[in-house]
Length: 197
Image 1: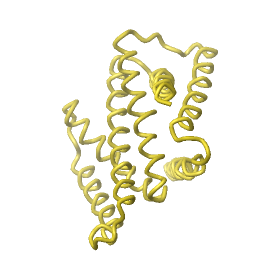
Image 2 (image 1 turned 30 degrees about the vertical axis):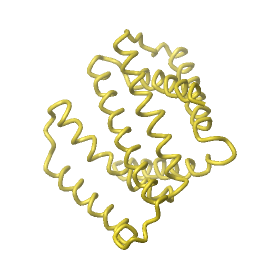
Image 3 (image 1 turned 90 degrees about the horizontal axis):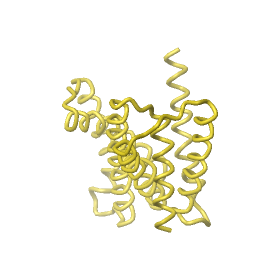
Image 4 (image 1 turned 90 degrees about the vertical axis):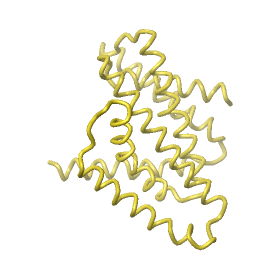
């Protein structure tokens, strides 16, 4: 069972980065993201309404959904889509894999949750592996300006993703389920980008 869940996760997350690269093209990046999350929000709201699972969200919850939408469905995707113009989507996926470590560190910082030693050890090894992947290009003055921008944007997108996860955690502690907060977050994220466009 664990193996099948692992393989399913690898399949879904792995192909997401390929789809991200394919989505780039004639349509501007912000518009592309608006289409993606505007449609996803619409579908999710319809499903939640028809199933009676859409929760009421108070003013504080809506503000957190707005911040969550900014982090998870706006800024981080702008960073990833833009980064993929300069570095391969596979490298962006590797940078994104550090999100587990950032989530643990942010949970410690904001919620005082203890970070297990094996998480720190695994995260440290992952960062060393990431540094080894990029080291040949970064160490010898051969790193192009675009590569550095792409790497920086991928890291910023990952940090925004982690911040969005912390906001989602706050919402769950208040009794709101992720499906409801993600529906609102996607709507807010798509709306903010639509206004930007």
